[in-house]
Amino acid sequence: MSKVQTIANYTKEKAEKLNIKKYDIYGSTVEQTSVQVFQGEPKQVKASQKSSVIVRVWNDDNQIGVTSTTDVDAKGIEAALKTAYEASHFGVKENIPDFSEKAKSPLPEVKVELGQQTPPAELIEKLLKVEDDLLNAHSAIASVPYNGISEQEIERFYLNSEGALREENRTYATIYLYTTTEQEGKKPRSGGSYKIAPSLPKLDIDSCFQETVTKTISHLNYQPIKSGKYRVVFSPEAFLSLLGAFSNLYNAQSILDKQSLSIPESLGEKIASPLLSVSDNALHPANISGETFDGEGTPTQNLPLIVEGVLTNFLHSSVTAKRMNAQPTGNASIGAKVSISPNFFHVFRGQQPSQTYNLEEAENVILIDDVQALHAGVNSLQGSFSLPFDGWLINKGEKTSIEAATVAGDFLDLLKSIIFVEEEAEITPSGVCPRIWVDSLSITGQ
Image (cartoon, rainbow, N blue to C red; front, side):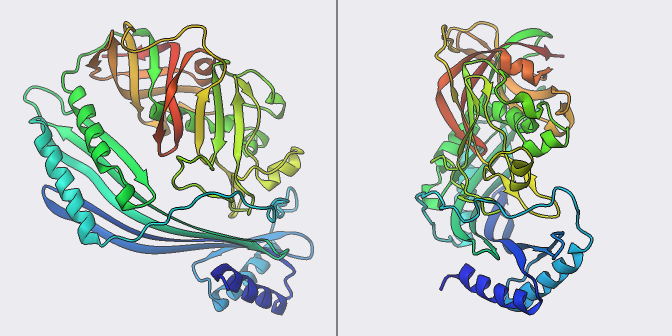
């Protein structure tokens, strides 16, 4: 008998004892080992096991109570059921959450590769070698202040009183590297990279090292830039950062709360260049930490959000789906309130472009590698942004690092100003995306 089946059995027993007829439980356990180093010595070694369980109970008046616990044994579940039932008498009486109508639908079949845990000493050894190689890669690289290798094993489950039963396991390993430079008479510069894989043997440490060195060195000979309007090319990571910052555009809960750039009638509207298509695809093969069901037990899927510039779908929970006469999409998290978030973006070319562009021939184009201060520089309700960035001025393939600058604009205008979506995509932690060319944006230099 599986672990989740055992939990389901004694949960049913305890619920009957408490005369509770309707309930559901979502839980996860994360085991993680992580290491950091500094100047040839281990800086931090952490091993942790964290459990989180959300229990929801409906009373006879259909009001809902929610509680959380870290105990998944019979005694812990009984206490959580009792607490949630008591809380239900103070629950909301409008737009009450319910079970997802897809909580018992078949889950998508995905190939899962599980790795084995590595002793911390081996993780430290690998990271110390990478740090030493970075410090010797170029005379200007003075330190690697931010670095780490970690391994995680995640178990998730969902069950409810109507017989829904879900469980899955995942493992993955990550590495991040971030260097800083010291040169006389010059400001410190930096560069970094991040990689993820199902297991440590599959982790591309060499690629992470090379990207970190290349980015760091490319920023050494920086120059100031004049303020003005420039044609801009967003790196995959930079464009996905903006796409995530303005996710209220297709978040059904934000739309119902009137905290969105969209309204319910926005579906079918042209909001971007026909060159652009975007999906939320938790099942993409590149999504190492992909999940097959959400916090409500709804199967995840490949959901088109923007198709050739047209807003096609919203992200839904069971609550928003009911209110908007739609279907839950597998993007919900349960708690005191059901929330919605994207899983894994897949950005790709929509219509074929009438004209192509490349950085080897482009003149006076800005390549934005990374945008910063998203928490302060984005007004998601107005659609505006003003963000400092790392990047280069490109002239016929020659890259000159920009000393300091910000990019500003309106996100909806940006989407409509896309003039080219490159064909080759890159894998990032938040999605798969190619470089995106935008006709004109305001750049403020020194």
